Structure formats: C-alpha cells, structure tokens
Image 1: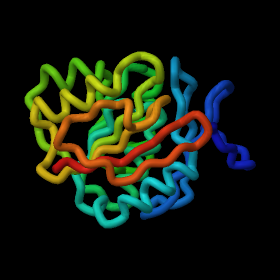
Image 2 (image 1 turned 90 degrees about the vertical axis):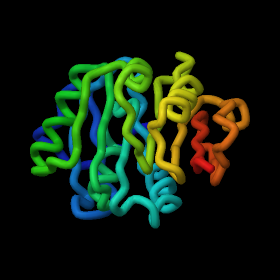
Image 3 (image 1 turned 90 degrees about the horizontal axis):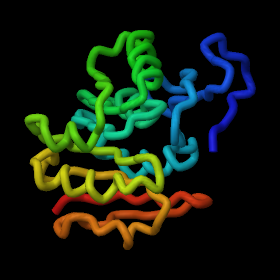
Image 4 (image 1 turned 30 degrees about the vertical axis):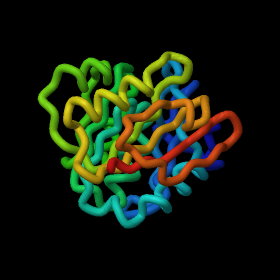
Length: 198
C-alpha cells in the first residue's frame, strides 16, 4: 500500500518506507519512516480523496491523530494550514521519526506523544479538536472504543469531523449516535469513512 517516489532519499532506511505530502506549504516534500508493528500507511490516493472532502475544514483546525504511525495525516493537515496538531503513537521509532520531520520543517505547531491512544483519551484532561484521524492497527478492536472515548470524554468540538479507516464497512463500526456519516469509500481491503459530529 506504500508508494515509492522512484527517487533516492538519503533519509530512507532499509526496511522503511516513504510518505509524500500532497499539497499545501510543504507540497511534494518526502520523508522516510521506519517499519513498525501493524504500520499501514494510508495510500496517497486515499489521502488525496479524504483531503478533497475536508478542503473547507482544515485551515485553522485543531487536529488530533490518535494512531499517528508514519505521520502522513498529521503532516498533511499542518501543510494545509491546520492551526495545530497532536499525534499519538506507541511505537518509539515512529514517534522519533515524526518528531524529526517536524523539526526539519521547523514546525512548532505539531506535537507527538509516545502513548497508548485509548489510555490517553480516557485519562487526560480533554480539549476539543475540530478534526480527528482514527487509523488504528486492524483486528485489534481499537476503533470503536476510540470513537466512544472521543465523544464521551469531551475531545470533540461541536461540529468536529472524524475520519475512520477500518477493515470492515462503516455500518459495522457502531459510532456514537450523534455522528452523521458524510462520505465513505473502499480501496482494496480498506474501508474509509468521514463522519461529522451532530
């Protein structure tokens, strides 16, 4: 599911991959990321479709990426004008790489924490986010609990947008009752959907 740039990258490491920022102030910048357990970066074409859906809503948004992985969603949001972004991930190599990318870009509006996303949502003092990305490892029963913690613990702005990526159709997700399905598509075995809080 990863796309190769076709160009050598001195940052690339054996066994890792690359991400490309599609649009915004860092358009076409490429970054290496390390392999990690269950790391499944969102393909460029899916990311492009998603950000076309979100085009009017990214500028000035407060963004939360609960399973940041390669950091593609977080970096794309900041490139397109998000006011700030917080990434959560358990993998220390992924976290270190993403922090390094933010430093390379001289971006101080993005933060990354090495932490279990569900525990963070359950135990930290909530702040409302306008845009949330949920792209957890598949087959680990993480998506539905994350959705409900976001809603029940007060992590969402009144009209927040929530992106979900899953191995099953959105109808099986069982989101909070006040979330409205805005768009959904499938790419191979991956189902992706965009919801808005009502």
